[in-house]
Length: 193
Image (cartoon, rainbow, N blue to C red):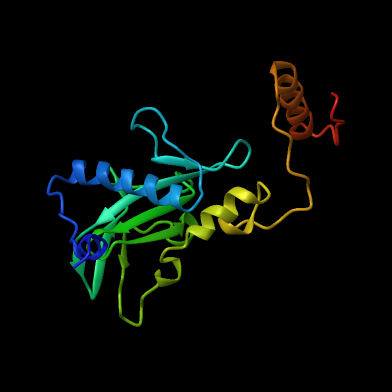
């Protein structure tokens, strides 16, 4: 047996402590997303409703990472809760759920399971709702490469140009004023202010 074959046959040791297992799953997510060519950033602290942002300035999406080892109903049950409560709608853009025993990731847009506290993954049953999201890294790529309102997040594509990211303080103030004018109903504004 070659070293490569030995590594492939090696079973992942399941970390018993849920907090440590979650931290490990987050590190696996960072590695896999990097393998997919995605830029991943981790916010400071753990008080946010998401674990990572993926993308580049002006095109970030938030990702909540969960993992499971719990067998149920012909698949694996993944709990999507924060402090034993359901996440509020819009708390993150995508769920990245890792089925550890199968070494499989599910990349699911938040709108596809909103309101649910559990998902059954890697299911062979006729009600396998999430199999279309198995290893769906392309959804993160599409969400970070397209218009701010995009189809990967469930929105409709627009003909509006992708906004320029302000380069300095003056441009940030001008962008803020233009946004306020538009929201207050003063109509279209020019780029210069």
